[in-house]
Structures are given as structure tokens and as C-alpha cells.
Amino acid sequence: MEELVTYEGTKNGLFFIKNRDTEVLKDLYRLRFMTISQINIEYFGTAKYVYNRLGRMKEAGLIDAIPLLRNQDRDRDLDIRIGKVYYITPEGVKHIEDELEEDVDISKLETRTAIKSSTLARYLIANEVQIALRERFILYSSPIVKDRYNLNRGDQIAGVLERGSERIGLYIPNSDEMVYKRISTEIDRVSMHGIGDIAILCWTDGILERYRGLQSTARSIMVLPFLEGIGILKQVIGTNFIERLIKRELNLSLVSDVDCLFARYIATDGRREYYVSELLTGDLITFRGLLSYTPQQAAKDRPVYLLLWTYQRWEREMFEDMPHIKIIEIEPDFGKLRLSDTVLSRLKPRCPSYISI
Image (tube, rainbow, N blue to C red; front, top):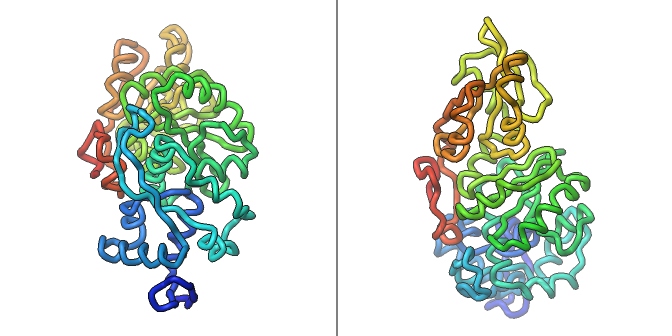
């Protein structure tokens, strides 16, 4: 159903706000910025139509755009050129204000465009998570998260994925050492503010290697390569995916869940019991728990089946010579993810067979 809204400045003084336009405005408020490619893949599907609708919305004063300049802030990790980036205006917020969950402070919108190019790029990269996971999670961007969870203004968190009572804090760091130090002290604190698991998506091998060294007492810290990480979040989190793998790949029967540092389940083949662990989600606490579980302990307790993706060579090398840990490699098959073709143009997945850019 369309809503007829009159705006001065449009060609004929009239502009029909369609349901899709309203959803775009809500996304622009929640995510702060989106590229035309991201908006198109989510709502319109054809380049000609998305340009037409965004042009009319901009003419009506509901949205505006700024350029994202390549390497403006000399951030080598974010050497990306995207072109125009759209954001919602105060007039646009007034149109959707009654549909938003939180109170709106229009004055805060004035500071949205005063943003570094590298920070803007991180917002856009975080939006790719929303595009891929929309049917399962809602992504709230960092400023909304900081207000909602009473976090500090300078915190590094990029957003929170929410579904019911489930909360996953999202980090997309660069290679800056100061950012690493801030995140390492921040993740435990945000867990005390109602944010449960932590997902750190790393888009270079160097960043991935650095963040594997994080120390934390948070419930779960998933350190994942960026593109594969989106697929893992979609497939694994909040599903019975691991239970299905145990039955299909190991031919074991589940005995019970287990609450220990290195395993999630106890399973049996009818003769003896095993711990079943997984590093599919890149969980640091599980990783360190496995390193501390010795053959002597396993002889008195249970050996371990460890599930890994086929591309996790580093993890395999860490455990393949441990006699009490048997590695089972899983071929990833997440189906095609909907991803924008601009933001991720320079990112290459480690297993291109299951992610289409």
C-alpha cells in the first residue's frame, strides 16, 4: 500500500512513499550508511529502478549521499572505492519515527556525515553481514548499540546481531595495534552489558592471525575469516548444525551436552564415549581448552573428536600430531550468500566454491 506524501522540491510536488521506500529508510537509520549496490540487492533488484527510487527520495529530502574516497585516510586494509554512499536525513527520520524501537534524537543526525573514510568503509562492510543474514538476525550499528547497551562512545564494536534473546557482538578490526588493544579489553566488558557471544570478522590473513591471540573470559569468541565467517554465522549459530554433523560424519549417538572448556558434547559409538569438539566457529576458548587437554587426561577420561573445515589448515597443524584428538574435516557448503559486488571487490574467500561475490 502506498502513502501519498507531498514534498516541495519534487518535480510535481508529489511523491508516493512505497513500502520498500520505508524499509530502505529504516535500514538507513539503523545501519547509518548503505551503498546503492547494497540497497539494490536488498530491495529493488534492477539498477534502473533503484536509481529512480533513490533519486526521487533524495529529491524529496528523505535521503542524501556523500562520496567515499579511495584510501582517504591511508588505511591500507580498507583500500576500497565505492562511490556514493546514502544516508537518511532528518526529514526521512520524521517519516519513520513512529516505527522505530528507540527514541530518536534528530540533532545526532547532523554528525553522521562527519566521519572518516575508513570508519565509513567498516560500516559498509558490516552491512554485508546484514545482507547475508537478514532472515535470521537484525543488525544494529555501533552508535545505536552503544546507546542501547550503555557502552562507551569510543568502543570498537561494529554492531550487534539480535534475534530474540540472542546477542552476538560484531567486530571488524583493521591491523592497527591500538585497535587490537582496545578490543582485547573491551570484549569482556560488553559481555557484562547483555551481549553474549563475540564474532570478530577478519578480512586479511594478518588480522586473522593477530586476533587468534586474544585472551578473554567471554562465553564465546569467534575469530573468523570475513567471507567464510558470514557463512558460518548463517549456518552454525543458533541451529542444530553440530548435532547433525555428529550423526552424519561421525556416526555417533549423542549422550549429553557438556559444559567444559574444550568440548560441547559427549557422544558414543556403543562401545565407549568421546568428547566432541569443534573449531568451525573459530572459538578461542575451545581452542585453548583443547591445547591444555593432555593425552594423560584423555586416558583417564575420554578422547576427542574435533570438527574442522577443510580450509582450516592452521588449526589442523596445531592438533594433527596429538594422539588423543582425532580430526574430522568438513567440506563447507553454505549455499550462495547474497553479497554486494562493490564492498567486497578486493576480498577473496579461502573456499570460493561456496561463496559467490
